[in-house]
Amino acid sequence: MTNRTEYGGYLIRALLFPMVILCLASARGAADVIIIGQGFGDLKWGIPLEQALRVYPDLHFEGYRIVNEKVAPFQAYVRERTSDRVGGVKFDSLEYWFRGDRFVGIRAVLNSRIGPRTLVTEAERSYDLLADRIRRAYGAPSRHTVKYVTEYLAVVKGMTWKNRGVSIRLQYNGAWKGDVDRLTLDMGKEGAVP
Image (cartoon, rainbow, N blue to C red; front, side, top):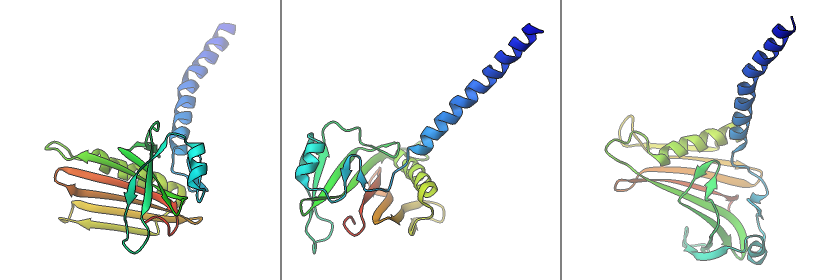
């Protein structure tokens, strides 16, 4: 009898262990979502550049970004030792945007090649992944646009969420430049980031 009980215990543990691992992995994936909060990473919205440089000493000036000619340009900063990962997606670049010496938002960009055997590019796949994760966390977007080149082929897709004074804009451009498509994620204080 004891052998059967021990065998049954081993069998139950052998079956439950993989299920526990899968549950933990899926919980980690669900937690890897863009969080609308008081800032991005260790930077709070609105903190002065001087304070941001103390938090991230590897932050350095990259250049100005003019989005609207009627408004002062953003000062874009990048980090030297960052992974450029946002919401589980590896971006080509991640810029921290300041305006008037205050941290107001981020812009992350991913470019991918459209090839002869490419059905879905990395940028388009990442757009779908992020859109799904953000939608699950914050509900339907406040704005959703899709422009088609044909009845079934989307060229430009975009979604915007506004929550707690923070805006998230996700934009996919399927025909950005020649054989390259682009995914752009903008996040920041509502009204401060385009």
